[in-house]
Image 1: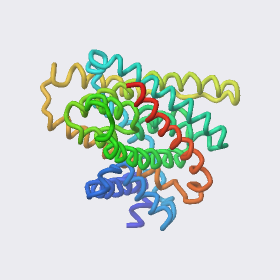
Image 2 (image 1 turned 180 degrees about the vertical axis):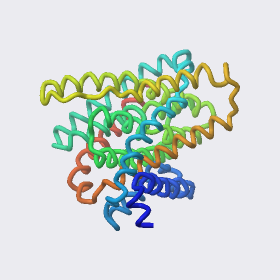
Image 3 (image 1 turned 45 degrees about the horizontal axis):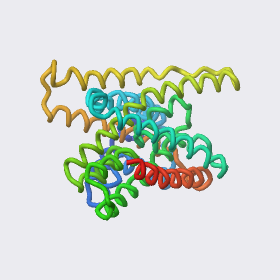
Image 4 (image 1 turned 90 degrees about the vertical axis):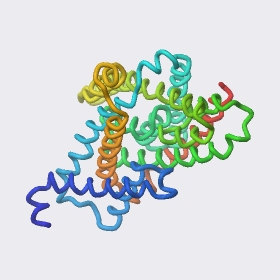
Length: 331
């Protein structure tokens, strides 16, 4: 086996992330772990492996393929989850509020991180993840921001765990709030971190709540596109002023947009598509993201968690609490 891995490190590394992702997906199906999700469990398994056995340097080529190439493929496929027509026809008001969520999350998190002297990159990734759509948003902007793989992995792990805690908290306090089911759904969709967390919080309140929650969340996902291009422009200006280094155009976002258009206007309308097919594509997307997260998790050391992640985590927690209150009173 060792000889095979050293001779074919590309396939060995891809296979290793495949194994970790498989374990993560299976673990996420167990009671309790389903609230955390496959991405977080995969990255946690990889972090545990790194602490116990060290970084498998012999597999570096394949691990890099999973964390970079497969990640971009997964982001492109993620575009199929975004129904542009629904957002534009039924959720323009929610789209405007979603923009407010993103601006609030980024501004407040970065102000707090500066006050706390937190790691800038992790704080920025957490700000985008909090404002837009959790791990998927972090994965999409990390190449644009030129973040280290370790910083991306730490941010994904934090956003998944904190979002799960908030999602569960919403289900506890929701029945005691003096708002309708639809308002509760909107609140969840505007303030929670991941699509999975939104579904976790809104589903117990009924179909109307879940529908409004997902609509509000899809608006935030749609805004990932203009936000990414704003970050491209900003990074190019920043690099030009500081180092003259070039920021590569994120071509995978064009694929994301194309897949969104295909999923909205082609599949089902022009090309007959079954729900089973769409579910299968969604599962493949999640699994590819889990493989990428596994590769990222292998770059994380416990020393870095203590030295780099605690202050950005504090900034994100404060922002998330303030965001929950702000969106609630804006209903």
